[in-house]
Picture (cartoon, rainbow, N blue to C red):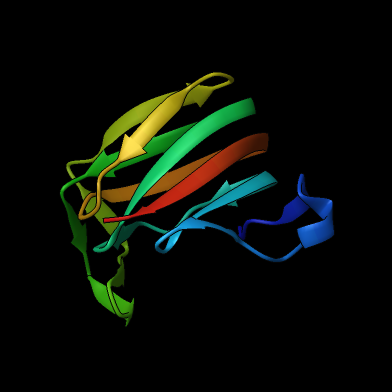
Amino acid sequence: MKAKIFKNIFENMAGQDITVHGGTYIKIAEIENLEGEPEIHESYTDVYIVIGGKGILYIGEKLKSLVEISRGELRGKEIEDAERFELSKDSIVVIPHGTAHKLDVKGKMKLIVLKVKS
């Protein structure tokens, strides 16, 4: 399934990211029924702050069938030896650049995603 953004809390800026500083940006969204694609960001650290709902985060070191889709953005079919973490309201996760990760959501989840340029 593909993620859908149902509501951007910054409604007057719908469809836009908010740049904070030097390439760092923030997005607040409510998503539903997301089966994420395993990915690695070479230049960004992700910070997830869950403000509602639940999801499963998978984290590991390497991706199988790695493909660079754009400069510094890598995708794969699966995360090798992935660890599984349950996320719920008030969970905060820091995913350092270079870390394989994937987010799955059954139902709805509202979260703040802070992308920090490394």
